[in-house]
Length: 233
Image 1: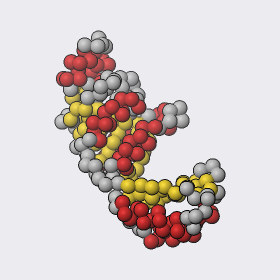
Image 2: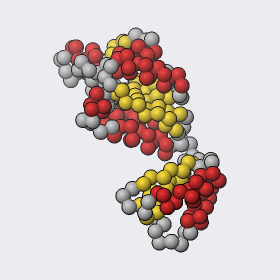
Image 3: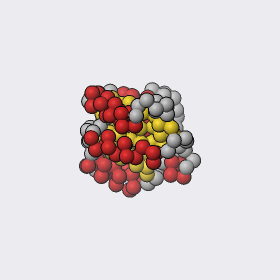
Image 4: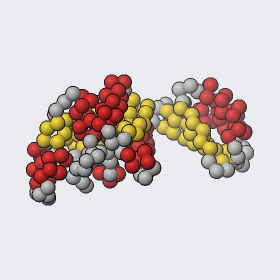
């Protein structure tokens, strides 16, 4: 499946908060054999969130949204999802009744428990705001621990496909392997091959659904580089 991740929050755009949610979700989706086609960060703005969600929902298989589910003035994600899908916001009685046992703040409780009509509730075991699925969109809290808790439940709803990966490390700079890298890329179009420069070395990652093809691509690359060299690990 083709996924889009949309992270909501002014703090992400200002650099005050590192977007660890996106990397966490992307890594686990890819490990299950799925593709992440876009990672989008949007501000706490109803219209901008709604626009990105509507477009992603229309163009891709599934959309994952995090952030903006709290009780403060800038938590507007639920309103934006409702607008994108032309649905009403309704109070989820299970969430409302639970929150009433831990708080007397009626306004906050009503906001936290208001989700788009027809949504499937995903319970948040470590926080107040619930996650939910509506159409081909899953919406989760932005607090990493809460996102991880709810995302683990959502992820189980998707099929686990075959996925394999391997890496080759080469000391030095990327320019020294361009010829060999381009050659193996052309010979194995069905294998995803990425080159990632680090400080003093390069990691070339090979991945795909066919284990034998991934293995053969790695072997071919090593052969082209002369696998016996000490700077190849």
